[in-house]
Length: 288
Image (cartoon, rainbow, N blue to C red; front, top):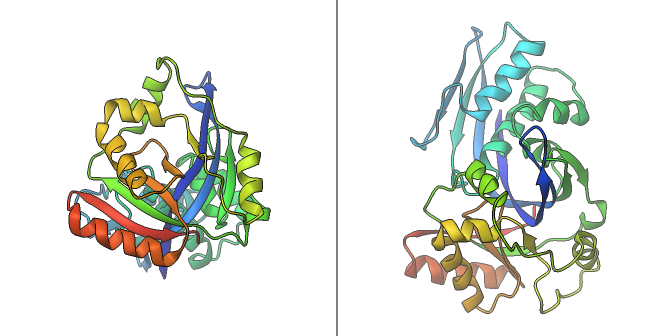
């Protein structure tokens, strides 16, 4: 079984507070984008689970989220089955694009069919929470969704089903620790308040009108990450220098993106930047 595992960006990410379980309550808008990894699932004759990848920096043992996803379904529903998982990576690792979470969700969805488990998406999403907070979003395979709680409570945004955005996506070649960023957020002074309510952002997008001159996008973690990793600010400044007004960091970074008015412009700008900045991953992507 050959599957596509899409990345995501956060158009809005508001950290509300730290919870008693040491996670953080957030309010976010997920957008699934066209950048994807390729995953192949193949049944084994024994009950072993193996993971391999073309990216040697990716852990392939029990710490891999695909391994955890397969092991979860194997333990609960199919103990005599085994699986080989092959991952071709295109989504940069640890970039705030949800690559690992997406990979895990695709394994859950794929095994649900391959092993004939017939689990509903809601059931799979509940199982996915134990793997990672972003995993349930990818289970629903929707272009846009709200994420609540620690991100695991997912509500597809039906009014945006026909909306397609184009982005210029830049990923500095650095690794950002998500737990570190959230821990620093707890003690970070003078954090910026959201410029608008999340409903204003989604209703503006739903009307398919041109976005206003001021930035409706928001990420509570942006100031924290920029303080620790100045490369993120330089990537944002690069997008702003191209005349893009809606620019944001995704997740805890370091990926940043800008909304571009057309496919043609996204690919043209991406090609120009790739020739000039070899130290950056640069992609033209759209909602998918």
